[in-house]
Image (cartoon, rainbow, N blue to C red; front, side, top):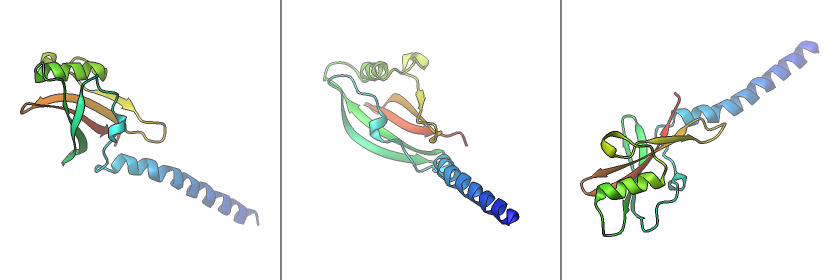
Length: 132
């Protein structure tokens, strides 16, 4: 009787541990996942999202939001203003750097945000940084 009780309690403990660990591990290995656009902090007044695309490459996937601002000003000025509004640190050559924040205690991924200029468009990207 005692061995049966120990076996049942052990099996329940292993099952519970697997039930908690499996989703946490899945979040770490799911390279197709991208953060929702809602993870983005509010953009400066007058800046709007004109495109929302998901891109994937060998390192995983990311969300890219193309933004437009008021007609006055260059793309570099818009990128700097968006970067400042998002609280991004200064990067190389005055471009905004990347900033990452934790999601939660069960979701161990961090959401990383950055701003760039490419072919006349200013974009904001969001991607997961994984521990594994």
